[in-house]
Length: 487
Image (tube, rainbow, N blue to C red):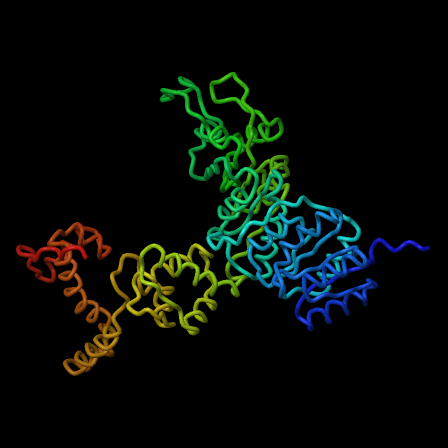
């Protein structure tokens, strides 16, 4: 009997959606595979008893159970069977559950048929099996959120590295969530019971970096009054997160490289060798390859760190995730004690149209501000525009009063009646600001009980400048009402 080509084989597809079964089966048959289909776990088991496939494709939500749970059971009887999980539940938890159940791969719906065909071919070629660990329930508190294709790829890489100790290098712009990725790798991995220790390399003075990383002995340098454990010791058995690794001085890079190569280190001023029992996750917002080319980063250290690269997309490249992220941040605000609020469709449109130079961190700050300061339970587009545009700075007690616009227009009309030249002589800006300045200063003085320093800080003026404006405007500061009570 002629042997079957290793790149084509028997494929069992399990999905309760007739259209998906038809389209996927057609694509795989066109690629040369022998395809059988099932619409439930009962049908899957019947097909398995009749003839075990070379590859199993299974949906997660099926009429009679969970496809990931069942995959683990199938692998107990067929440990070398590659299983590819197909799911519309496109979350990090789903990807990790699929990996822990022993699945060969995970493809989020909707998927590209060419991608699926390549995954089946790769599964047939490699014929790998994975361990069968118990299923972990979905955890809605997991911080990584998004169903975009870019985030799905991030989830898939995380799912593949949580079961090992490979060094991971996370890259991405500021605010994209690099530390969240590092924490997810730690919290979902085998070291989760041990410490997760972060260190920001950009925030440590260069002369103290080695002592911070490796610790120091008493008397090792001026001011070292006692022995201190470094971050490597603090993270023993767990994960050491080296944030902003691209800002590490070149001389400290050399010491770090030796530790990564040998797995051992000594404290500053010490002689005893200590084993570095940590998993390393590093992160950077810089182009490390460019830094290597310019001599600012060691090439050998770069390759030591870049074993498993994870590139986080900027928020502008995953706009489809913005609504879900915004809802998540509103939920967190409600859990923190703020009133629960929602965004209308127009508000979401405004959020999705913004480029978010500060990425997810900027979005979180905007949503938190809206949750705290919006008067209404239902947040609209006007409020979002004002917040994104700086119309509602941090610390303000309320959204801009819609009456302000009418008041300014009324002032313009009054000035025009008093002096028709006011609209043409270039003095309008100074006149309007001048009329607003007195009530602003008086309101802030009243709010802070006459304390000029606090009032100046609230307005954004230097104290001496405020005094000059008080004199110029003739504002009496001898008697001020007390500051209003909190609450």
